Amino acid sequence: MLIKIYGSAIHGVAAQTITIEVNVDTGGVGYHLVGLPDNAIKESSYRISAALKNVGYKIPGKKITINMAPADLRKEGSAYDLSIAIGILAASDQIIAENIHQYIIMGELSLDGSLQPIKGVLPIAIQAREEGFKGIILPKQNTREAAVVSDLEVYGVENIKEVIEFFNEGKPIPREMLDTSKEFQEKISQFPFDFSEVKGQETAKRAMEVAAAGGHNIILIGPPGSGKTMLAKRIPGILPPLTLKEALETTKIHSVAGKIGTETSLMTVRPFRSPHHTISDVALVGGGSYPQPGEISLAHNGVLFLDEMPEFKRAVLEVMRQPLEDREVTISRAKFTVNYPASFMLVASMNPSPSGFFPDDPNNTSSAFEMQKYMNKLSGPLLDRIDIHIEVQKIEFEQLAEKRKGEKSEDIRQRVLIAREIQRERYKDLKISYNAQIGPKEIERFCQLDEASFNLIKLAMEKLNLSARAYDRILKVARTVADLEESESILSHHVSEAIQYRSLDRGFWNM
Image (tube, rainbow, N blue to C red):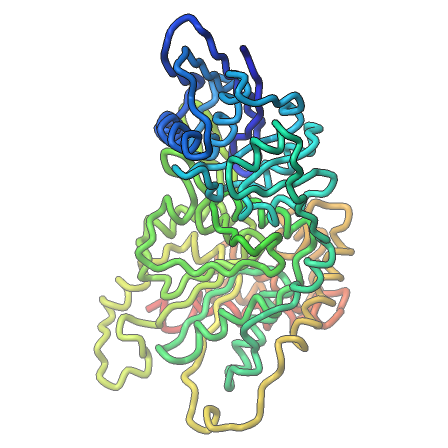
């Protein structure tokens, strides 16, 4: 008897429905699995055999042929165990499953018949709804994530026996229900850190506010213990809240990477990713034999923080140049290409010298050669893609001992929201959300300068020997500073502030 059952495969951050055809033939004995399965799927026969035996069923001693269509698409992972097992039971007449074609069935089996959670549930559920399936049957741990998708029945099971009884006896499985809007609104403003906890550093806080308002990349330069990491960790608290669309995009990426917790349904706070400096280029941008999203994609719609940036391998940093411009990562293999979104805000930090205390090093331990070698770890093209360079000064004792609290993140966030709303209205007819995303054509249109501003930026270009890309970045930042003041025009003091945020183009680093 031939039975068709449906599963799903992940390709990038999207899903593709897989038809699993199970044919049980009396003419011989054997177990044949075809359709480009990987080793994890080939090993499923052992898990399925033990699981079925432990719940009172068995794999029949007949010729079993299982085809996973489309046969030219490689399938990977152990998530097909449940669908193959149910298909074998139905095809061998051990159970009756007349409506099995109405459901996507996915899950990894343990030897006792219980189910383990799987990756990529959200894109699978979205695809199931788009293709008109009635529902989806998953491990219990994944149901909250799938329930984000409306107009789809989501059933969570803990053991294969529940699925067998659902189809064979009509025994109901409790349906997972979720009020997505309510859940989203309840958790949208929960942040563990606040800017009021940061002592002093008013200039750096202002730079962070400008960066958040325009979505600009920023690098913090300062001695150890000056508060660079502390400032960076608080930036998600002043960014605009995720929209529901952004939350779904972000959750899909984390779902594919298996980063969604069992109690999480929808990511409601912008991600903050802080990889260690020993990270490889593949782990940062994504890839591998079976491509997976990297840290820059996991930071999509959020913040990627590179602490002590010069300590990262230069090759690792250089692979970020294209994603910083295009806001997506393309991973190509011989037979397929995968695209992962990577629209993130880069926040980096670094010491001003190998010793960490230049130019205030009392022992003068950093020579000019060592300084140059240290700075050469960051290429000019990469630094050009960072809009704001800000020096973070050492905190004096009087500032540390001060009892007065600084400005709260909530107050800064209100100004950022107003500036972002101005930008959203300005770019409503374009595929742009904020100033950091604008290109040369939009700069020419929206960043007009008066004579005083023009002369000021001309002088800065000549004195600092800035590149054309740095010129564009200054104009973008000046546009953001003007938006924070709710000014339609870019004035000379807006340009002046933007020029001040190009520390690495001047001062001691150009010796």
